Structure formats: C-alpha cells, structure tokens
Image (cartoon, rainbow, N blue to C red; front, top):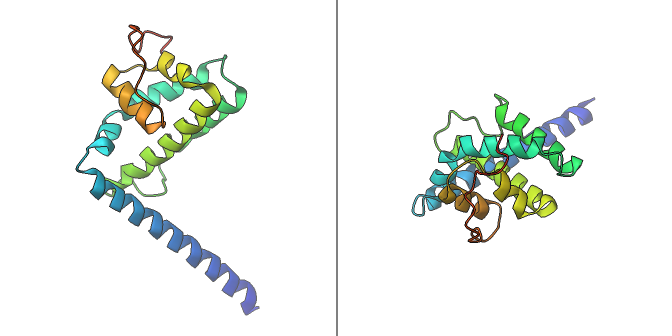
Length: 152
C-alpha cells in the first residue's frame, strides 16, 4: 500500500523540482537580459504577437498542423493558469515569451518566414524582434511595409 504513495510522492516531488528549475532559469534569464532589453521588447510586443498568431492560425494556406499548434498556443496564452503565475514580476511573463518563441520557431520551420512577414501587424522594429525570437535573421529589405498583408 505504501509503494503507490511513495511513487506518487516521488513523481510529484520531481515535477516540483522541474518547475522550480524552470522558474530559476527564467529568473536568471530575465536578470541577464536586463542589459540587452530584448525580453522587455518581447513583452511590449505581446499584443502584436497575439494578433500575428491569430492571423497565422486563420490562414488557410498554412498546413493544418501549423494552424493547430497556433490555436493551442493561443489557448495557452489565454488560460488563467500558467507554468509560472503572471503575478510574479518579470518571471511570470517570461514563461509566456519562452513558449511563444518556441512555438514561433516551430511554425517558421514548417510555414516559412514569408508567412511571418506577410501577417505581421506591427512596426518593422517589432518584426525584427519577433524574427530574432523565431531564430531568423533580420527581415530582408524588400520595400514592403510589414502589416500590409492580410493582417486579421
């Protein structure tokens, strides 16, 4: 009888340690990033990023798997429960930035950077930050204004 409980306690303790490690890593990232300000820039762009994700999720030209990932990401961002509660200053929002960056990298890998450029609703500077988050080089100089795509 004590074996199932000890297994449950061990798994719960392991998950708690993993969560604490994530919080510590995000806190260290936020402290290190205060010098460059890119985390702060990413947080400022959150409304434009949510509009971008919504536009990408509604794009029928993108593969269904990509759109499903985007819908799940939007659901995660809208959920009141996060990996790290948003009430914790800086670190609470940092987990959202990390999850969005990972999802953007996955989407760009499948859909291509053109989809990102085509649907970006914000400023060119914001697109540069989002491209950096997605692991892409700075946007190519095409003369086209970001946000002039289909948007919403």
